[in-house]
Length: 206
Image (cartoon, rainbow, N blue to C red; front, side, top):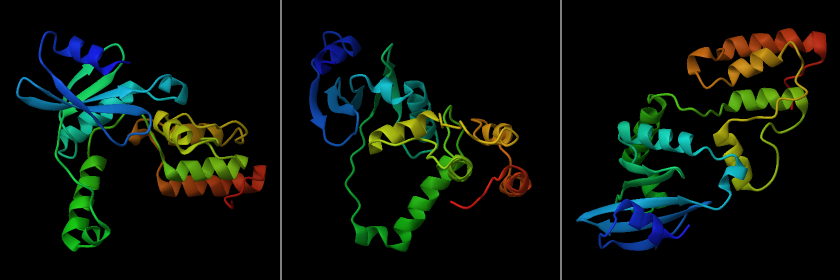
């Protein structure tokens, strides 16, 4: 998608200056200065839906991050494409020596805690459930391929659960629920796996 066309849709007749930003895996990002404001336009790459990318989940994640103070404000969303427009925040890479400082580690921990305390997202990823699915089937639940492909399968939250023992499958599906309150606890997970192991050959070993 031509960025000029999107910018004209957002700010018709306005003189907007823009420049590309580096980084990004499947998106094209542009810094835009318009009407005395500076924002970032995030345009999704061609056919990214084939990687399982859910732009609704991306928008929800961006709004949640902004609401807890660890992400930029979402100014608007270009519809129907789902392109995000957020406030531009000046920043710089954090060098390794700075990351090792106690004050930096504290700030990072506070940010991660804020995200975990934020509202639930319409997407999920649970490392414990991934291990359980792998132990039951001998396959990686999000398949193989490039980093980008696997990463976006994770974001979409669509694991491959084929081959999981029938009496264990409802439990695994519940564990992968988008509603955190519906997921079984770690203690319940362990008890369920031990119960299934003798009867169906389910092993918790990799």
